[in-house]
Length: 342
Image (cartoon, rainbow, N blue to C red; front, side, top):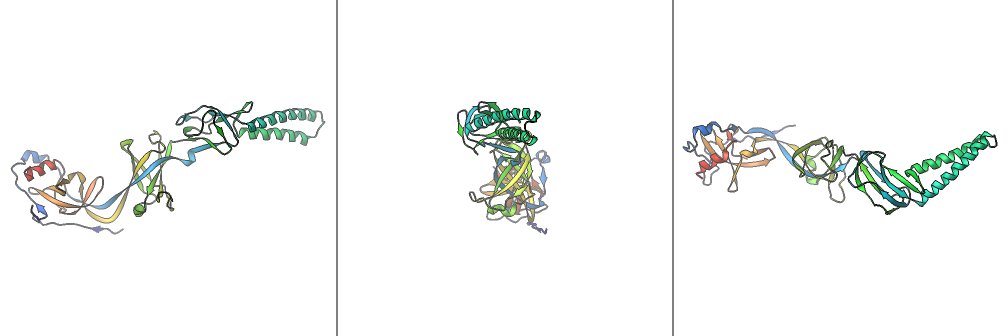
């Protein structure tokens, strides 16, 4: 990639206070030698411009670690043993359900079991053939298999539904006494030790976002915490509702700080093909709707500058600084006020 380098060499006295572009106050008696010894400076550093793109997003569960339980029959919840947001283990009893269809299957299983006992006795006494005995046995196994699809048979048409995996209950539908139909969801369990952040990429930012980019993620819940990730997937189809492409970032969540549906800010650093002088952002002084820095070369002076672009760490300088200038980065506001006579 070829980069364009913009170096701005400014004459020493290019402008003054009135209508010029630079003001300089030198040999100020107000700034003592002892104070100056502790003043730190930096030179403008040529850097490739990094454009910060901020995307909105939210936390969702990993689809590969999320299991939804949907009923295969009509029935009624006779008992609910869990709460929304609760942690459950695989095999924990979640619900007890009652269904006329399960009662029918239970009755059929009882009859089939009796038929099998009779067939086994007859087979031992050579009163029926082996295929006839195996047919009775197969019918019992079929009914047992069908019943296991619905849960553990508690008898009298009541079945207990177990959790299919370890995880947190992220969806709960209904409570004790709630009727349900076949195909209706009853609960969803998710392992959130890994989560996915789905970020919204608008058309104006599409040129800066691509798969494989490293990103930084923050949330208002943890303002001082930065989570690092990578764009694993970028959809090529715009969502018809919000007109955005969806970027997926999968990250570990072993401490469970990130919760499903939590809002996130996703920062993408996109490099442009331009190199410009840069200085720490905190060195800049904003006064009277203009931008200034304090320069310490042979003496202290004030420079008005123009800013091409900012990011969270540095400012890229459009004009007003020489690459050999020493820009003050400590106590610059105090020095500025002294030079201005404030």
